Each structure stands twice: as C-alpha cells, then as structure tokens.
Image 1 (cartoon, rainbow, N blue to C red):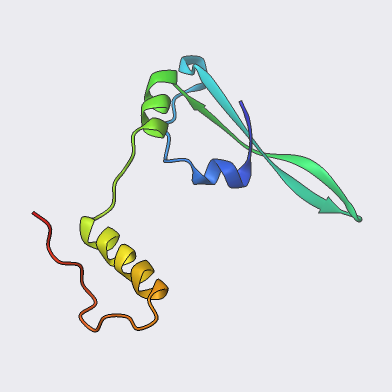
Image 2 (image 1 turned 180 degrees about the vertical axis):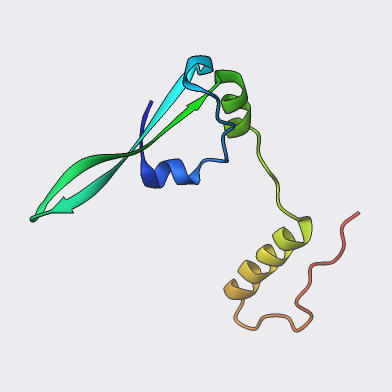
Length: 93
C-alpha cells in the first residue's frame, strides 16, 4: 500500500514484522522539491501483518471524559453572548 508520509503519520503505531512475515507492505512517500520541481521520494517501508494492523487502525482510543466535557463547555461558551461564570457542565447521572 502506498501512502503519503503526512497521512501515514496520522495512523496509530503499527506493530512491525519482518518482510517475510508481512501481509502488508506500507510504502511511504513524500514530495521533494528540487530545482523548482516536485519529485516523489520513498522515505520508508513498514511491514505489518493484516489483522493486527486492521485492529490498530479501527479501534478507537477514547480520551478522558473530563477533557471532552471541557471542550464542549468551551464551544458552548464561545457561542453565548455572555458566557456563564461557573465554566462547568452539571454532572450528569
């Protein structure tokens, strides 16, 4: 599979295996500017097994509930003309 370096960097860490055990070869490319022209440059090869890579990519890693509530409160405050002074959402349940 061929991917852009920046996109590959957004993926979770993939468990690498040797080339002979791999089901997927991730070929990582980037653009390199030389003499006013862009060229594709291969920057890395990553070898993984299919199932562990799929699990890693498709399993979400949720953040802290407190951080999520704080972000929601900030977004609500930004939409209000006069934000509340308590800066909290009442505890649910």
